[in-house]
Amino acid sequence: MHSRYASWEDHLTIISCELFKSGLTCTKIQYTSNMKTKIFFLIILAMFSFSMSSAQKSGKKIKISGHVVDGTMTPVANAIVMLDGEKTDITTDEKGMFRIKVKPGNSKIGIFTMPNGILEEALDGRKTINFKFEGTVPVQTAEADPLDEVVDIGYGSVKKRSMTGTVNKIDGTNPKYSSYRNIYDMIRGEVAGVQVMGNSIRIQGIGSLTLSTEPLYVVDGMVVSSISDIQPSNVKSIEILKGSSASIYGSRGANGVILIKLIGSND
Image 1: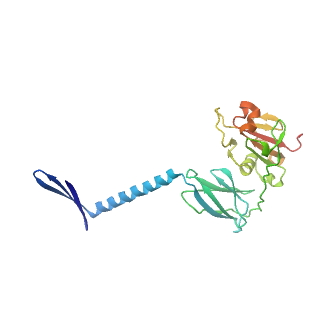
Image 2: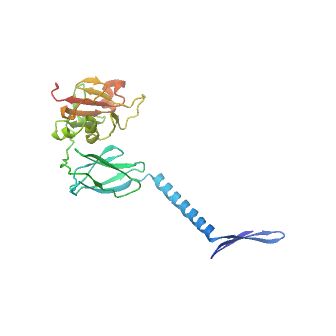
């Protein structure tokens, strides 16, 4: 038989007793106040670690909200919410407010406007994150993305609704695009599902079988190795193809295809 008795006063005292054939033997263990504090700290730390581990394993999305203003404290409407450098479908409302659900793996949230660029903040477990741009921010306009628009896939034109692969398109003739500094900023700010890092582009949702993750660039029907020299003001349209939509390019389209038409090109 084994039993224990604990007393919590000025000291933590544990009395452990064991019954042997020769009789009952008891051992008294006494901890000082300092040692008692350490024990409490270790217990709390263990409970906190278990709680954090359970939350991460659950994979539940976290709701983040915030307010976006410019240097004059004017709310910024229709600003684009970014997660880890990627565009989302969430924008700020007329009061500059936004709400978004983020995955436990997300680390940064950002707000993108033209021509002010992007502001980013680390999530760090926060549920409310506000942003303030320097100076004034021009009025941002929201645009529709109808499924019935015609998409040029390089070998003819079809309606987006009828395509089984993913296609994103922006109309470069909109005057607002001329405010972008370069074509990479233009793609970063306008096309969902595309990750842009410097002069490198990666189309999300594609598992490449090659060493490169760069998509195929096609400008005015011609395959090119770089689009760095293209100015946003010269762009007529940009289309992003992946999946079956890019399969017409064979293995070259394995990482997706970016179709660019320039102003003045033949349709």
